[in-house]
Length: 306
Image: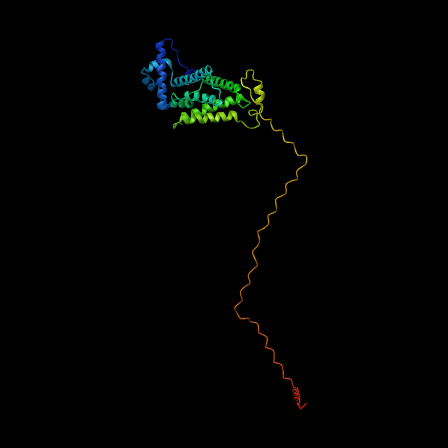
């Protein structure tokens, strides 16, 4: 055991009933102090004052506040394991949607005692190897329980139920903790149906071509030794596309961009108002008169009697 792990271990376990009651009173007082004042201001003096014990009596059980905080985290994990054991002894509903509701409600109930305390536990509590091992053991127990439910239920359409169980456990734990332990917690009556719908649709409407989708679901159903409900065969998978033997022509190159049209014809310049310096040619001379005399006009005919 390292010095850091020894620092956060309880000093002794009480053997008498009276000593155990004192230890529980110290833990209850510490939960209130950490929830009200946070980790930094949650001193051992405040915890002892809240528990109505002397500071010397507190140090007989815990060497510092970190050890108390680890003890509170351990108690929270043990409560979650106990809730799983109780669910195993109960008869679960037939509908997958109602089973998802049980999963969500169990996580919500485990976070309702004191959300402020849980925020301190998950975000500021020290982590020892023993505590990390306990957290891992708690998560594995929940994943195994959820996977068993998925394997036995005919409405589950994912093939990789182990991965699906891990996703559901992690999603429920993180989302419930973040939204309930937030400074502005969400309304539980609105959180629960949305979480149930999200989990149900994921388990029943999985799409894609990976190992966790519809492919292989029927093989998993037929390999179950004690399946209680027959599962109708699903649709046949689509065949792989046949490659086209004819090579496709190369794509045509993009047309060369044409330059924009130039401006129109240049307008005619206005006439120059300045006088032309060149001399103008002289006007042509008039034609001379004809020297020949005019021809005499013929005499008019004499009209006689007929």
